Image (cartoon, rainbow, N blue to C red; front, side):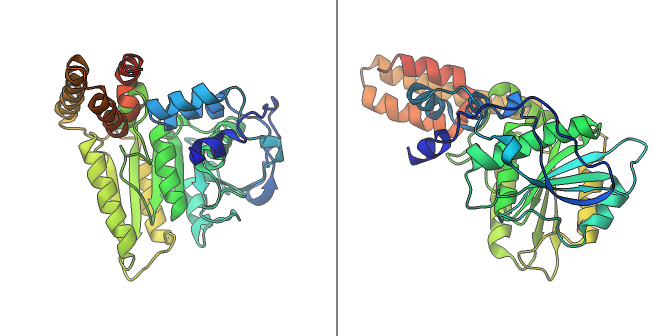
Length: 337
């Protein structure tokens, strides 16, 4: 419940309605102010996309979901505009930092110039700040405004991060596949479909499976991050996500991608060719069967009068399938006062 309280404490700020004038000159710009919030960063939408159905219901019962958690006019961003705009237009990388200071990682500007990628990162969005009430809405708002201001191709919008920021980037990519086409996950990640990272509602999950592309970059001398990457990739496969790639940075520990690795990652992430998703229909059918079996088990427990076990089984369903089973979970909850 501490998580809910922390999230809701700052979730009723009204948004401004005019785009700021973002820099047009190439190069690095700090202290950039944006003023256009997005409906996708409203409190209600964040709750719908990022919390499990039972948790979202508890939030809605205890708090008003009106308003937005961020007053964007009081936030600042670091922005890098590449030297040249390619024929296909700009791409965009929204980067979640692990520290309170937002900066372009060393060596990245030459690659951003070469690939025509606008880079943006929010200040005061490090690991010590809340994901749902700060790090996530800042990333979504930045993406929406800069797509508008720089006429970015919507199919070339990425979210990324380093270390703890990488873990947040995965959560954002999962919850907002309609905004971000893919994610650059640099030196940390998590499994999806857990209490920490619930699955989103069915329409978003299908879009994530159908069109999202993920790229893991991890140092060979970073065993903790490598183990986390392995667990994350295994979970993707179990949830029918197949378009993910990875690169190991040899002789490297917990570090941001070097120029060569970043260039390779962006080439893959921005490649317009669709990935082959062999076995997707069969995988989805397996997940549907597992979900239906758990629902039938809960209904049988309820029919037998064992409400205590039914409630625990419902919690387990909520943890595992999250928003993917939102309609069924909420219908069962109404039958279990």
